[in-house]
Length: 76
Image 1 (tube, helix red, strand yellow):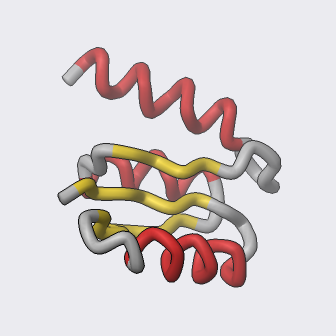
Image 2 (cartoon, one colour):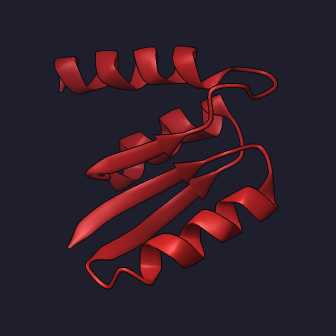
Image 3 (cartoon, rainbow, N blue to C red):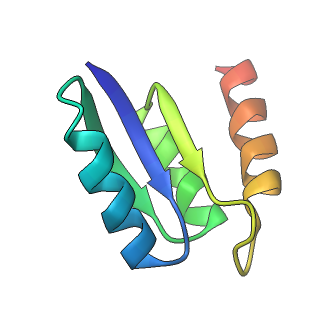
């Protein structure tokens, strides 16, 4: 089972991606986040195999969130 974290500032987009991914059968959406800061916390807590990250989000964009998630993973 592939564990996925969805990150997008639009709940409708997250819901659509969740429907598509869960229909595959071997993918479990383990969490969702609406911004980069929440994505960092969720990645730390949930340890997903894959993160589907929106690039343009308010507060902290997906590129900066990805940088910080990767840096956290290198330390762990």
